[in-house]
Amino acid sequence: MSATHLQSSPFTVRRGSLAPVLLLAGSVVLYVGAALWTGETKMLDAEGVVGLLQRMVALGVVALGQTFVILAGSIDLSVANMISVAAVLASYIMQGRPDMVPPAVAAVLAISALVGLVNGALIARLQVNSLIATLGVGLILQGLLSASFTNFAGSVPPEFQLVAYSAFGGVPYSVAGLFALAALCAWLLRATRFGAHLYAVGGNAEGARLAGIRTDLILIGAHVICAVSAGLTGLYLASRLRSGAPWVGRDGVYDLESIAVVVIGGTLLAGGRGGVAGTLAGVLLFATLDAVFNMLGVSAYPQLVLRGAIVVLAVAAYTFRAKGHVA
Image (cartoon, rainbow, N blue to C red; front, side, top):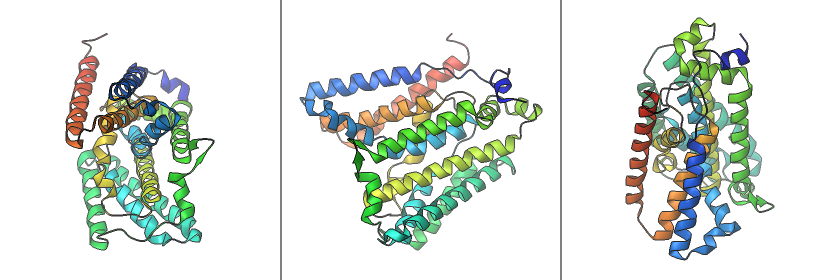
């Protein structure tokens, strides 16, 4: 069965959404309004905007991977610990040596893919609930990491720090990498058989199975992509912090926030509807909130309250619409 046919089949949920446009407009209004209100007009120049985009990178990369598993009707609560493992493993292997960068990156990507494979197999083959399976795997990773390391481990060489701190033509490598990765993910979702099957599985898993789709392989693939994206985030944070520590992923609450921005961006928790544009728009909103609260001099706690309220309202609105109460 062709990807084109699957995209138009009755068990594939319509993907269009106004969420990305609304979130983008809201973020721009909020950011510009806060800059003018506080007199921080320097935040509106090129350097300020680039700084805002850099706030998106860490959460944005892992959220792109989370988008795949949520589209498939699953979820991944192990990403925060996977990020910590990746950051520590990378800096521990590198030990400040440029020649150890390729082996370190390869090891991180291989272990990330293995973790994703385990998550996917537990869910797809053993029928373990995704929340329980990924939470359990995350706790195992946390236990192994905490038993082996208690503080920063190793260091990354200056050459690897270029990932987080260098730019070309005024555009940071990290920001360019985020949008390049987003373009790749969008292509996978929109222009490949895997993407069409992923939407089909999320929209109606039983219908997809009856149509001949290997739903287990699609689900496993989505979890591998998610875990690898967490590994990439860990590599970025190691570059940014110049080392890795067991808490770098958990301190960022990347598991919960990656789910939140995907849902805010219009991807249904039940799967089958959403996409990359909405996820990036959700990440932009959270980055804007960070910047605005810094401009206003407000502590992080009210920001957590506001984020929680936004997530609850967004989920409530999408649930209301999914039930057909809103056209």
